[in-house]
Amino acid sequence: MAFPADGGVEVAASASSLLCPPGWVGFVALGDAALATVPADSRAGLVREALHVLPVAEVGNPPAGPPLAAT
Image (tube, rainbow, N blue to C red; front, side, top):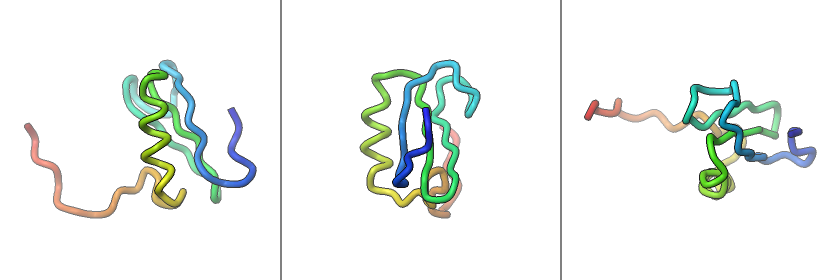
């Protein structure tokens, strides 16, 4: 898997990725390109659609807001 040469985000399924804890989505960005790993193929399309609308600078950096309540 390589960083997209023209920028953007590349998403791949990898249950054994070391970018994040098991079962999570992991991101790494360099410049205007990013890689994302998802734990299963069934999640790749959903993550790809969600990230398609974000600038790479915002991938993995949600806007500030109130803390989430524990459930």
